[in-house]
Amino acid sequence: MPRLLGVDIPNNRPAVVALTYLYGVGSKTARVLCHDAGIDPQVRGRDLREDELARLAAILDKDYVVEGQLRRQRNQNIIRLRDIGCYRGLRHRRGLPVRGQRTRTNARTRKGPKKTVAGKKGVKDLH
Image (cartoon, rainbow, N blue to C red; front, side, top):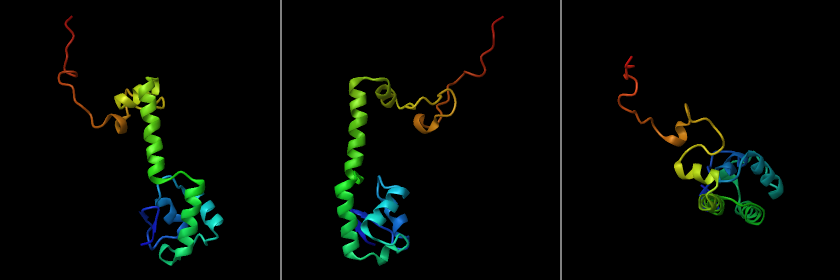
């Protein structure tokens, strides 16, 4: 398995797909990278030569923020929002959806599994 920026690139995938295993590289960026480095997008990961990998690494270092640096930058942005106490920072702090989604139903990805409240459904009216 070839390594690029500390990430193992799969052997049996085309280069354009294998590049998307890098954090911060999507399909469009992978196509642009292949074009800029002069690599055939359909060549398999195992067939990439060392000079091609070096060209890809150089382009990624020079023009893109990927992998650890991107993760760090993203976390610093969230910490900044929390520290200044803005609405988005409060939503991050409480573990709720940040971008205006409803929370009465759904939102289980952010809130986690249901926490059942005892006695909520069986309460009778006292009339």
